[in-house]
Length: 280
Image 1 (cartoon, helix red, strand yellow):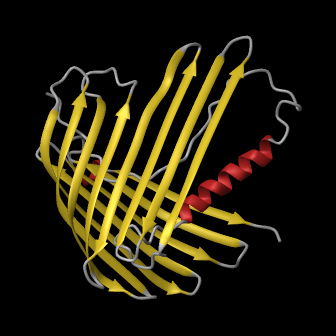
Image 2: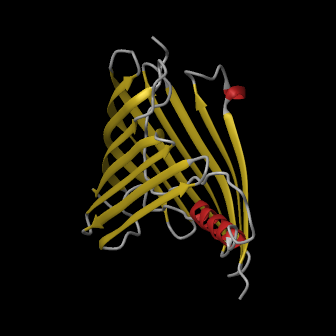
């Protein structure tokens, strides 16, 4: 049996990308295209810069509920292609001063000339309970589904459920560092292979260091391990807000999977730089 690859660790996403068919282009068909492209880029940059400081525990979280529902559908028809894309996203969370719940869901479906081009679901649920000012407990469930998986060894579905404890090592305005760890269980279905059921464990570290009133550095590390594979994801980032109009974020993301990588030299490294300037 093919050695398993990635264990799902945490999911919290609700973005969509609509595909468009290649057709004849005119100035009228492309009106506002540059504006739309800039808006999409700025939105991606804002998402990239957003810091999810509530991810570990409920530190700094406001009492009450939040939520959002997003939906996007596009349909393109011309002489050559019929393309349909649909995206649905949901975020919901609540905090009562002691317990925090968060749910996220993303579903994407695409079709071109009556053939499916995408059909995938991502869902995640997180629960956190403060045990003291620094100690908290957590539980999580993450689900992925790929309706287009058709090659031997590809994942049709993957479910990870875990729980454990977390501790805030530092928690002040200048520095925040939290770690969490615990056991879990995974159930995965691969194409033309037996269902996989195995114990797993998760370990995560979340670090924030303020450098000045306008800059900070972060380092987030996630490790998911089971008998079949170990996955490590690490993101190191420097964010700088020069003014209210100018912002910069530089990041290095490293993904290592011992099921596919012989060593750290084979890890996937992604370097990103985001800059945006808003005219007032």
